[in-house]
Length: 121
Image 1: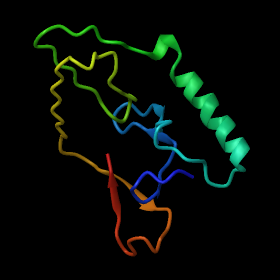
Image 2: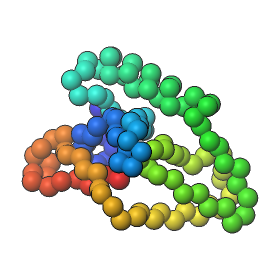
Image 3: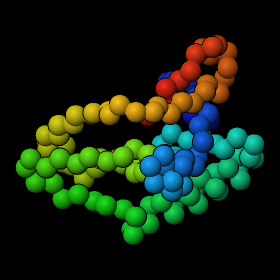
C-alpha cells in the first residue's frame, strides 16, 4: 500500500447514481490501493480489468481546448484528468461544488481520527 500522505479510506467501488439509477464504477487508479477482502494479486488484477474497461476509446472524451471554453461534469459519473498541455501553456481551473447529498467514507485505520467521518467528493 502506497503512502499518499493522507489517511486511507474505505469507499465503495460501485455507486448508484441518485438521479439516473445507473451503476457507475467509482474509482480512480491513482487512489485505489486494493479491494478489501481480496488477495493482493487478485485485487490488482481486478483493478487493471476495471481500468482497462473504463479507459476504452469508446468511453474517453478528449477535449480540444479553444479560448473561453468551460467544461462541467458530474463526479458521480465521470473519471477525469488533465493532460496534453505543454509546460509553457497557462491553465486556469476553478472548482465549484453544488449543494446536495455528500458521499462519505470511513478511515481504513479507525484509530486515525476516531469518531470522525471523512467527507469524500
